[in-house]
Image 1 (cartoon, rainbow, N blue to C red):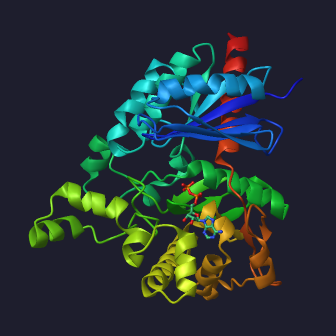
Image 2: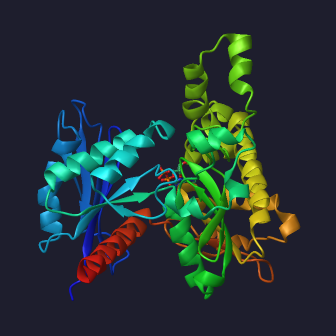
Length: 403
Ligand code: ADP
């Protein structure tokens, strides 16, 4: 049987990231991004057969950009694709796994949009545009929150009045589930352990950052909460702050809610601490040149990350390994080394040569001999979305056969 292909789409408010995933291949025949959608300088960038291409698509919206994608997909996959897999950030409590999109699923994604106001409306825009451009293809939603629906109640509840959870869904959901799921499975493979008998701490460090405790293939706790703001320090997000901060700033500075929310989401984290950049590459260069803001931002980032990992160890019966992934986790020996320096109580220690080697997509073990396992595992969210999309198609086919 020829291998099946899935078009994976990840829509932001002004971007569409896409990848054509073959179920049997790690690399993608086609991948790219439509950027600055709705603007006069909107542009489509893609890579196909090892070559980079760029095409201006002035003023194109999500639908127009997806229509431009059609011929590229046809060229890269003359046999067509089996389905489209959409990344959806928030699935609330409703979605514990990926789902084929129908009117009911669309309504449910819309219903939880107030909990992910920056993400779900953009994801919906992409789904609706894709349904219009590719009406004949099954469309599947893969949720960032679904992997964390196995959190026990003592991990997902806030210590707030019960009615806020029961009537309004105020609880911890967690995000980056697709990535934590993928890397924990890869880590088990790399370590030669069965997924269903393995215990991991995982640190996904990209622009957004989160940690996760995974036991026997299931998420047991994670650092993000009701929204992706909770937890560790990120590029522009603060992570945990005192919950009284909003009222403190309102009383002392007269800041309205929106101003504090914007500050916490877009002006904080590495950017806020350093006063320089949200980009770890820039901060590392500045750190090496003695920039005090960059040094502080990196120190706080690593300390808070280590503290989160130590806290999540409460969810594990034992530790089979610590996983680093995401742009920073996969590429920064400095951040890995500084983070581990705070975790000596766990007996974690690095082999510095192996640590230096694991950059630019090279993964592997980086712990010193005789110490607990530490792995760099390049994430592949697109592949995980494609695999979950195929699982949904297979399950639908089985149900159709049974009927
Ligand atoms: P996103 O969350 O948007 O998918 P990525 O996973 O690509 O983001 O991670 C982006 C982060 O990775 C940025 O802070 C970037 O500076 C950092 N990064 C990428 N390459 C390196 C590198 N070689 N060294 C340190 N940080 C890096």
